[in-house]
Image (tube, rainbow, N blue to C red):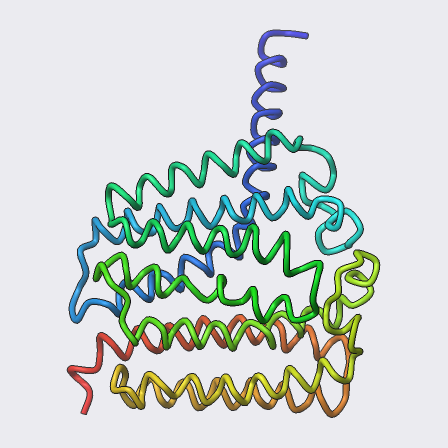
Length: 304
C-alpha cells in the first residue's frame, strides 16, 4: 500500500469514527432543544440580547444536551438493537464500546458545564446539569422501563430548555419561562405517542412499557386527542399573561386547531400514515409556535 493510499484509509477511518460519535448526540433532537433554549434567551430580554452571552449559553447547553443523548444511547444499546428505528446507532451496532461512549458523554458534559459556569452563570449550569440527570438517569434508567407514563413524567426534563435560556440571560427564572416549559411539557405526550403508535411493534419487541403496548391503540389515540386539547389551552397563556400579542395569538389558534384536528382524526380512525403525519406536524407545531412567539416579541412595538 502506498503512503497516499494509507493516508486516505486513515482519513476515512477517522471520518467514520467522528460520524459515529456525532450520531450518539442525536443531532436533530439536540437542535430542537437548543432552539427552544434560544427562544427563552431572546424572550428574556426586552430588546436585543448580549450576543456573546447567547453564544456561550447555546454552546454550553448544546454540549450538555449532546452528553445526555450519548448517555441515553449507552444505557439503551440493547433496547436500541431490537428496534428498527434505533438499531443503526453506533452503540447498538457495537461500533463504539461502553467506555468510549461513557467517556465521550462525560467529556461533553464537563466542557458544557464549565462553559455555563464561567461564561454564563452558575444557576444555568445547575439547571442544565439537573436536566441532564433528569433525562439521562431518572427518565432513561428509572422511568422508561418501569411505567407507561414514562414520557409524561420524564417530559419535565425535556421541557426545561426555555427555562435554561431564560436563566442564562436573567440569572433567575420568571413565570414566563415556566409557561414555555408547561407548553413543551404538555406537547411531549401527543408528539411521542403519535410516534409510538406506528412503532408499537418495535416497542413490544424492546420490552419497554410504552402506552400503545400496555393500554392498546385506541386508548393511546384518546390520550393524544385529550393532550392536544389541554395543550391548546396552555398555548394561550402567553397572550393572557401579556407576554405576547395578537400575532402570536393567531399562530397559537391556527396551529393548535390543526393539532387538535390531527388528534381528532387519529382518534376516529387509525392508520400508520395518519400517525406519522401527526408526529411530523407536532414538530412543526412547536417550532412554528415558538417562532411566532419570537416574531411577536420583536414586532410588537410596531404592531397596532
